[in-house]
Image 1 (cartoon, helix red, strand yellow):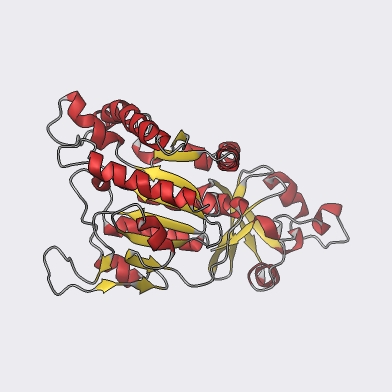
Image 2 (tube, one colour):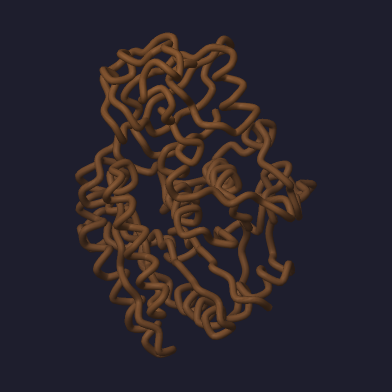
Length: 362
């Protein structure tokens, strides 16, 4: 099997027992499977939940806390316990882990996004196993990923992974709840995530996790859009991850045989950047952007709103609405001066406002 880059996401329910403590049997099973994957020559990035679930008992909570301060305090205690367990058990296989805690700001700020990418690439090149979790201790609601399912999807796109494996306590996606309906049938393979599938998955989760099947499907949808194939399911034994890569996993495979990889610049523009303004273009510019894969020139612009500078991201609108978004090479003031002029009148009008490599269609 050729060397691949795999992102493995392990949920809280797959790591802990009902009391919120690390289940050593489950934990060791995952460690052995990751070690087997590495031994087979693959690169692995681990996205691990479990900090809050591991820590809340130590704070005296009888169940997983629901308040923000309770979750953050539990995460502060639990994260250190979690990474300590990883270090001890991975060390038995000669694997050195690196802890990376991320927030939404690490993705929304371009320089931090690039730094995260550079750090992950350096770790992988040096044979280190990155273990990623959301920084629950400092995250606030509007700056969270929602759950680690989405975090794992975004990470898989960022590192250009071949596969995202989401391990959970349910062996795949069913057409009904398998816990309550014995006639429920599993989807072994799906080419895409449709609106009907999202509606069907009600998002039932465990008592120690935050994500249900719906969140996993939304994450899968995101990963697919970034060119990463997805597996959602369960398994046991040291060979479970190898079997998943070989197509014999106990769960649901999602994705077409061939997917288009999205550059990290376009990922940032599409999923993480903040929009600073709007540009309205005529039919010729719309055709050039959407159909011809060309860059946007000033001559096709007829209106501008918002205040932006070079390097900011703006939305572009045509006659029928939003066309996409891109990173501008000029400020709004510079564009207003050049707007609508012929290419022979100003030097700026012969240069791209948005280069096609910094443009993402809606």
